Length: 238
Image (cartoon, rainbow, N blue to C red; front, top):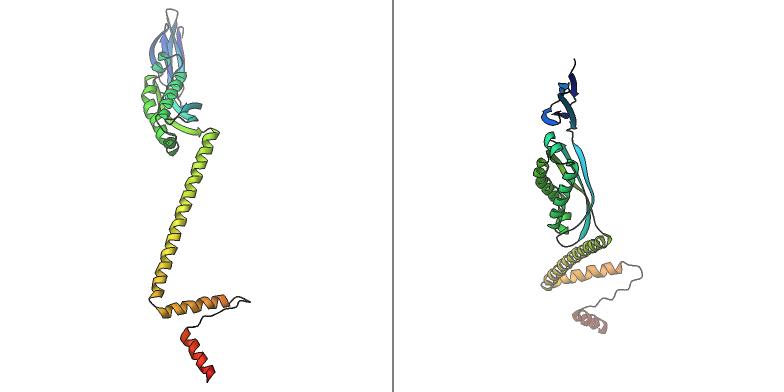
């Protein structure tokens, strides 16, 4: 029909309808009729509403304890309000990128390196929580934010490796000290038991001598009590 045009908006997109250059409404997926009269010219700009990836790579910054590092952050967003997204800023993706970059710097500077390495999910959660209202102001929905990589300089890596080794050595020394204390306590208990039982002490001596004599070529010297030696000399004198 003269002066009438039909347009189809596909699924996962919306259409911003303009009449003589002025925004009039947002078209949902389906078939729509437009007027093409010279005095009333309508046109449509399609906007994709699917989830889109946004990466913040190689972000260099300082932690709360003044340690330099680089982070790679991955985010996903979608257009929730196409009219706001298109009409508010010239480039909504660049605006979201800058906003997340500033938030990331603030959150990292508020954390120590130890806290950052111990719990990356806390940083991701803070970025998502703080970034959601900023994205909404741009007509966007911030779906996910995640810290992919924390890249440390070489000297910081060496420092952390030395700290880990020192902790391991400390734990090993602590275990050895506990074992030595337990062994000493066991020896003290054994000595106390043998002191109170001469017969048990003698049996212990015999067991030890038997173990020593078991080796080839070993010579065992046994110290006999003086009473036995005196009796033995008396027998020889008779």
